Every structure is written in structure tokens, then in C-alpha cells.
Length: 260
Image (cartoon, rainbow, N blue to C red; front, side):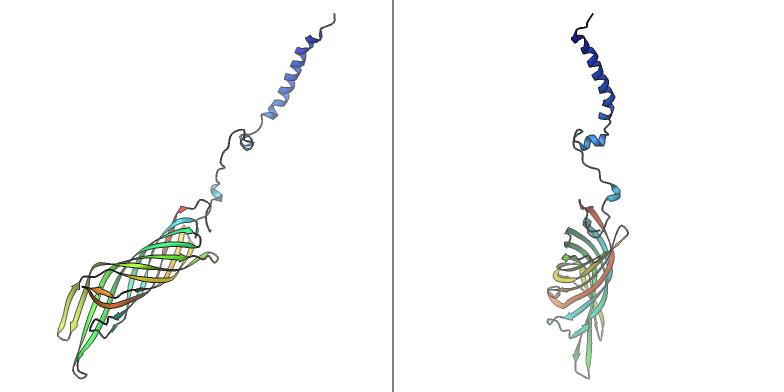
């Protein structure tokens, strides 16, 4: 008996299902990464490889904090309002400086500092005649904080950073001015109230990668805009040359990294 054509349909369907089962595994063998790449699994940000993260360097962070210390040469010139005619114009002090450097551009940064320092000036005058005279001296000692704010222009030769800079500072006295006055008939001690003052500065700083941070060095010239005052009386004009060295660390790494 001849079969009706419609009765062949189940056999055809069976053949199609069998073919689908043969080729289905390769179709579903894509890995999760392939699904992500084709967009079937949604978008996913690539994970950063720690081995390829930017190394800490001279310009990879937004903020650098450092500590410096070193000698400061002080020069004192007597004020014309005093009886002093001369003095031991040079003394050596020790400066200790904390600094915070904000590097918002690779070639330009702003640095704020707090510098602990001390002054020791010795001024003298003579009274009497050429053959009969007396020497009168006064030694001045004062502790103070300088708060400089400087703008630095940064250059990167090889693995170094060199930065010429300029700025201004505010001088805040710590305590009073101690005075030791010496005459031919003896010595006496006095104290005077000091007044804050302002000044300008300029110099050159450098940095070199070392360990997790940088070795730093700073050479600068600074001078008071006015004269050193105590009890409203002008005493001397002061200028300084200092050389300090130290170490700084970077914080808040830039998103795309900076200069290695």
C-alpha cells in the first residue's frame, strides 16, 4: 500500500533535529570572553594589569610631600635708624623645611612650605675719640617660621627634574627677640617684641628618583622686603642663601600616569 506524502514529515523533522544536535556544540562553545567581545554578554571594562601600571616617578602623582634640612648663610646690614656702624654681617643657621608640592601640570607646579629657622646677628658701634673710645655691641637672637609660596617651572633631563622657582614668604616670629648688649662696663640682656615681615625668594631645586620617592635638593636666595623690626624700631636688613637636601614622597597617582 502506498504511503501518503504527509507521513514522511516525521522522518524529515527527525533528520533536522539530528543535524542540529551535531552542529550545536560548536555554536555554543564560545567562551565568556568571546561573548563579551561580541557584545552578547553586555559591556565590561577591561581590568588593568598591575604589571603594566605606571611606576611611581617624577610626575606620576598630584601631590608630593617632602622634608629638607641644611645650612643657611645670613647677611645682616645695620639700619640707618640705629647707632650701629657695622657688624659681623655673616652667620650660619640651620633650616628645617616641610614642603607640599601640587603638580597640576607636567611643566608647572605650586609649592607651599613651612621653614623653621633662627637668626643670630651681631652689630657694633664705637663712641668716644680716636684715642679714647668704647666699643658697644649687641647680639640678636630670634626663632621664626617662614611660610614661602613659590611657583616652579619643571624640566626633565633624563631621569632628573630641575625646577627654577620664584615666590614670596611671610615671616612669623616665635617668641621675642633676645638681645645681649655689651659695653665697656659690662653686659646686660634685653628682650623685644618682634613684628612679622614679608620677603621674596628665588632659586633652583632638583629631584632624582630613589626608592619609592625622590631625593631632593634646593638652593635659594631670599631677602626681607623691609627691615627687621622690634618694638617698632628698625634694626637691620636681612638676606639669606640656603642649601637644603631631603626626601619627598608622591600621593594621589594621576589616572593616566605621568612622567616615569
